[in-house]
Image (tube, rainbow, N blue to C red; front, side, top):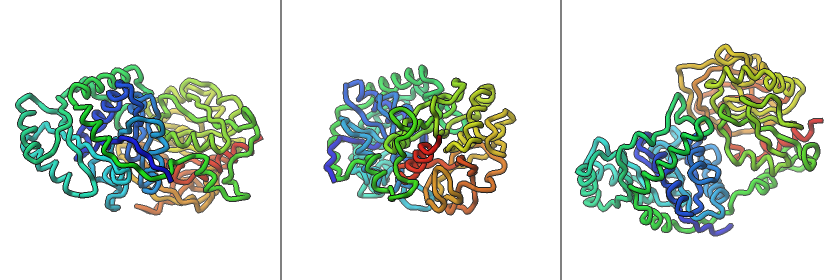
Length: 469
């Protein structure tokens, strides 16, 4: 157990759409421009916002999800990601007190703030209110006495007169105003069916947007007061998460969950190829860290551009993203589709989540994909969204049958059929159904998981890759 002393802030809001991402990313960029090493974090499972955080800070954006990883891992994962930094900024999820449906505060921004003992800055969309803003701030500050609301940043303020009315109301309520931002549509990032367009798809424009956010926040927020508030966070008493220590703790002697044998690949390590590029942008940083600690060499490749898997590939990870946006281009890369199909047919270990599931299907919106699975995928009008509790139903390179994990679904596509003869998962909450495919070395499913919650998954996959000839 260590004492972790680090200035930190949680950026929250009364509801989604209030401007959390604008403020959090702008703060990260503005403090980074001051020469501070800023650690970026996101409460909840979202993959897209951390990409913007990484642009703002030059460090990997990391998620803190109390549902998928458990409350006990929030502080250790935070300490791991923030090691060596001068300041940490945590962007919240949804409204401050919104969490997993039917589970009270679980996975809410409020819970993360309490676990991190961090002061909260409330971003309020003030566009349609004046004095009522004081009642809103008072309610959020008093709802849970363990959540320390240190002040508000007013967003979408319409005029100087509007700002005066808002400030007077909040002063009367004793609530500090730490910033005022005017309406500025030029800094907004474009959105589509699952939220913001990821950084990898618009890097030059995203850099310009982040720079504009930094300028807006620098001009409208009291950075010195925000830093002073961040410094009031007391020390955390926890052991920072470590991928090697997590693997050692979960490994069982003689099991397939032990770290991979040092055979094959550079320096005797198996190569695990991880899909990236604009079509496959969803990944948690801890997954690559766990695979590396388990004895694998992680090598990225881009299915839109690369016509072959990385040399020496013995394991293949295809995570989430937006293949539906790039279906024609993915389909046109027939050499790589053939290489993926051949690797899977030879029994190579493949872990595919959501976008990876679509890529392994026969077709996506009528465009030929890899044909590894006897299934077809298409866009749908229905959004599937929410946390899931799952149990592995079939032994695979990723998980032994009976392994229990918590995960997250987030997609507007449908795969038919939804499960193969050997399903990947049985969902136990909030609904009971089977989902996904296990076939030879392939594990493919819609379920997004966070491997820090169950490091044996990474160890098992790395071991399967090492066992390949």
